Length: 521
Image (tube, rainbow, N blue to C red):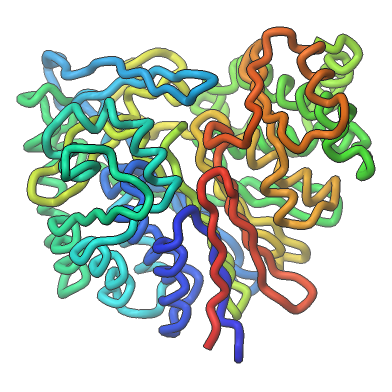
């Protein structure tokens, strides 16, 4: 039997949707779009056609591109700000909590629907009706809820209960769904079906009108007709970062994550990480110091430069200023001091690779009536609004930590990966990359190894699986550290596929129910 490709995702239906397109003769882009559309049904607390994202894709022959379809700030043409529907909600992760803001004024101009259609138009090869078919079937007929999706629905339940329409999607029987229960979304299924038949632009126009009608100033939101008319996905050149014999391709400015991951890789090259130290106290302290330095880079005007001086971010990952930051990391070592997002990776038999990360934030708690689409709350997330809420001018392309990434050697794809996890995305991807490229761990071990995250002066870490004394060393160096005794969804969900030694393979992150499917003829 011939291998047609491999896909890694965070949910079984999502992965199977992509694999089914590979079996039908689709390429990596067909597969990743089909998987993403399925995820809007089966990973409903994590992603939505009311959200946004980015995809890096390509091959050795045609090169690699990034399609950026993240959100833009709304409010074009508003003479004065309306009374805003905007309120805080706390999400409890167990050992830690995170505050998000929801309501119609938390919704930015979404790009996911138009982005997926544009990506398929540019690089897909099978008809759109075939690409939407798996999502349509599960939306209409229902799907089985996975343990991880049941857990995440429970986390975001305070947001879902905000409106009857969202509550019906998440818990139609009035109680939290359990693993093995079935959910459906017939309205979304019908919309996707019509999208795949005939001219999709006519149905996109209906979706855009609904955004303006239901999330405009008359309803306490900020989205205007001028906003949706002006929005279009942006094709970008990926950020390129050398690491040994590899080149890492990831998201460029104004996305925040790619540059921080690139800077982290550049610094790590100077730390002389020893393969034998993996999961030891030496390894964990080095990672904590590295992540602390990456956090300091962000605090040193990084978000401002994403917009005002994006070339400086490219210069940083090219090596400018890295020696000083590496010295800072060494000094830290001497001192011993949910995000609702999902990722899909695909490599097909022709060695086209695609990595796509998308998000709905946590959702704003409101839907598009009749379409079954829960709209984002990107304007209500602290991490992508560092200057404060509703501060950026209308029409500004929002920054994001989402960083779909492809690693190439001689322009041939070796790995495609990415992660969900809000501000922890940069830490999750950086550690997974280093686990493979520097510590040379097998892919499954690299993806599922214990993780850390540093934000400012705070450290969070997973202790299960660490070497003797490593957890104690971290807590000595970081007395206020938050310790997770088990692997946690808090630390993201890296899904990775790989091509090498004549085979295609992958690894899914168990934290978020990661699944790998190898499609065969």
